[in-house]
Length: 314
Image (cartoon, rainbow, N blue to C red; front, side, top):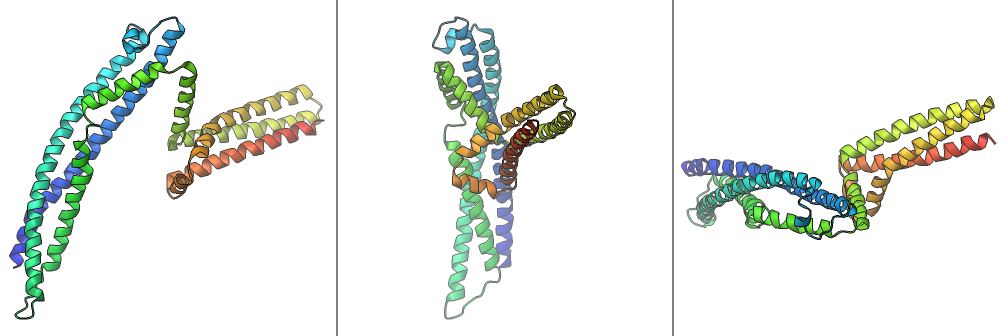
């Protein structure tokens, strides 16, 4: 009977390998597709900004076609066509992945049915009261069946079901882009400014940007402390003009620190308790929260130090 499990293992190996490859290919392609969707959404926002510039210069219109002669809009639309071309290629690849997924899923289902029947038969023989037959390969069969079922679930839930939707199709992406462009063009100048601020805040919690802002804070804090130390010496020597100049330099550093810290503080302030807890549970999230907190404390400390130094001169 050992030959039966060997045959099952031989039949399962290429299917499990194919399922793994499909999942990898799918993740890569959808990541690329999402990147291009993000590029199109940013392009829509940029078109909106270019349209606003044209409106400010007296161009009248309410639709994209009204502004297609504008150099800024034309430049963005050229990039959009390139991105849409990439989206069309991705749709073709994803269609092939969908076909491969369905074929592999069908083969897995057939093998699962065979192994399941064999397991049931062996369990019946094992559990009968007369002439019971124990199967040494039964645990291995059950393990193999579980692996195939897991692969099957992953294929169906994470690949086939997702591809069945229309969100990755060129037609769907184009419709969504056109809708987004229309929204951007209809925005008032005030709405656009508020939207751009919100977008900047959303990007604020990018780990790389947090690190950059933290470095800016440290640099300005160091410079400010040096300036205030110099200010104290000038005060002692009654060099008031020089001292005031050093304090002004420290104030400029403080402004830079507040500017670097503000978007992160706003975004964290808008984050709900559940998401904050999730961030605290991850290495990067904890780094972000700790860094932003330290940036805020640095601002508070420098503010007090500037006031203390200024009062000491009175």
